[in-house]
Structures are given as C-alpha cells and as structure tokens.
Length: 401
Figure 1 (cartoon, rainbow, N blue to C red):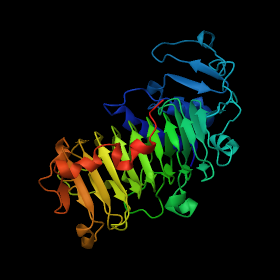
Figure 2 (figure 1 turned 120 degrees about the vertical axis):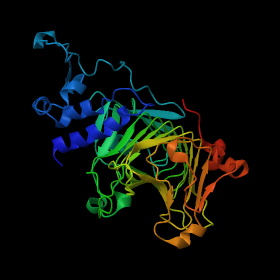
Figure 3 (figure 1 turned 60 degrees about the vertical axis):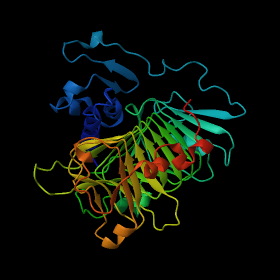
C-alpha cells in the first residue's frame, strides 16, 4: 500500500473519533505518521488535509505551524525531539517492576516495540512496563506465552499506536493477521492504539479480514486504548479480559472470538458504508462470539457503552452455536437493525445462542421487532453480566495506576 493510501485510511479512522461526543481531543496519529511516510509536498497538494493539521513532526525537529497566518521559516520554533525526556529515564529496576523505554527517534534504548518485548526475561515474575513514546510504530508485534506480565504504556490512544497491514490472505489466516498478537498471560495496555491499516473490505470479500490485535492470553486488561480496523478489528480470542474507556472501530464482526470479556464505558463505532433511509440492507455487525458448547465458559458483556457510527448493523451474529453476548445500559443509535441479531443463517442456533439486552437506550435499543431468540433480560438474569465478577476480576484485575 502506498503512503498516500495509508494516510487516507488513517485520516478516515480518526474522523470517526472526532465525530464522537465522548472523545474530543484532536488526534496526533496522522501527524506522527506524516513524519516517516508522507512528505510535506504530498500534504500541501491535497486540499483536505492542511486545514486539519496544526503541526508536523518532521525529521529530528518539530516545526510548529499556524495555518491561519503566514509565517516565514525564521519564525518557526525548533525544538530537539529528546528535550522532553528527563535525564534519568527510565528509572532503575525494583524488586517488582522493570521499565523499558521505546522511542522511534532514538531517545530510548529501543526504537521498536518488538525489540523491547524481546528483551524481557523469559517467564519473569516482575511486571515489565514497556513505556512507548508518542508516534506510530509500523511493525508487527508478537508477545509469546513465555513473556507474561508485560504492560504497554502509551502516551494517549490518539498519539501512540502500533500499526501493521496484514490480512487473512497475506498472513495465511485471519487469526494470524493481527498487528499485535498477545499469547502471554497478565498483559496490560494503557493509553495506546492498535491498528490494522489494510483496505476496508466490502461485505463478503474473501480473505480481507484484518485484525488489529489478537488477545489469546488470560487476565488481560486495557485502559483508554483504541482499536482501529474494519472487518475483525479486535480478536478477543480466549481468556478473561477487561476493557475500560476504550474506543473500538470496525465494520463487520469487529469484536470477535471466544473470550470471556467485560467491556465497560467503551465506545463502539461502525464505519460500515452508509445505508439509505428505508433500505433493508445490512452491512455490518458489532460482535461474532465463538462459543461452541454449553460447557465452555465464555461470552462478551458490554456495560455502559455507546454504539454509533454509520451503516445498518446487527449487535451480533452467531459465529458459533452457543454465541453469548449481552448489552446492558448501552446507548444505541439508529444504525442498529430492528431485528438486532443474526443466527449466521443457521436456524438451529436460535435455540442455543444467548443474546441479551438490559436497560439500553437510544433509537437502536427498541426491542419490539427483535428476533424471537433475543432476550430482554430481567434484573435477575442481568446481574451476572453487570460487573467485573463476570470475569472473576475481583481475583486478578489490578486497579489502574
């Protein structure tokens, strides 16, 4: 993919963030990507971008611009990129933690995230905090089972991101397409985005699935993170996972897998193509849960979340026969199809799926025309899904520090 194409896709992704009511901070990811992949001439030749760009981080200096006034080069403020770092960062190890520092411009010991992961001791009982400076890290990152207790600490989900562009076709399967793949237990991510910049597929496209992150380790937690992609953005593969105040973007099955996960105060944004008023087209789905039997202990619970964007989409479709998803206290816009859910065109799954809604609001939360197998939960039915006890969080989930 050429730089302009990637830049345009990233621009569209960020527009989805800007259009939300919950997240109003101006993202810097576009600007950071410019540093490595897009020339100033490319930007100035496109009338869409200049009015949105407040500065361009270019090379080893930052050039600050004010687009509503004319300034010559002599009035630009030039600052060394490493000036913001304290002299003794990162601090030395303690008995319980180690801190590794990543900066793409060489201000730290590591310039790539994967290099820092590789430096973590095998089966270390310490918590290793990988502090990742502002910027887009265009690399594929894998955390193997032998590297538990790792934290990715970004500087904000709109200013720090790990990006790759694999698809199911290019990586020999959807499960392997993730820009970041976490197989280790006790992984934590804070204030960072995970992106897959592969082209947005049309519904039914073969091999175009493109995962931003695959989470296959138990006891993972995400605070203030972003997940950007289209089809199959967030592969919530297996294990118990917690998501708090995260931004999740996609079009088709953009939260999928067989994890047992609790999503709290998250914003889910569909980027499916707009659908004309009155048209019956369905072109997206939020979830595709993969529970295969009643004996498995998995499911997705979304509590106090918001759901909006574009297209006309289902809340979920039954990727596997015992697919389990609950939405509670969630605001839903009118992009939600009136039937709400889909059985993956297999009526036998109507008897085994568990699709529930509880005290949701918004024009998309009207349950009058929901499919017969969708459940409007009562208080007793809803209780197991409403807090972190759903994922045994009282036993392992650490407070945000």
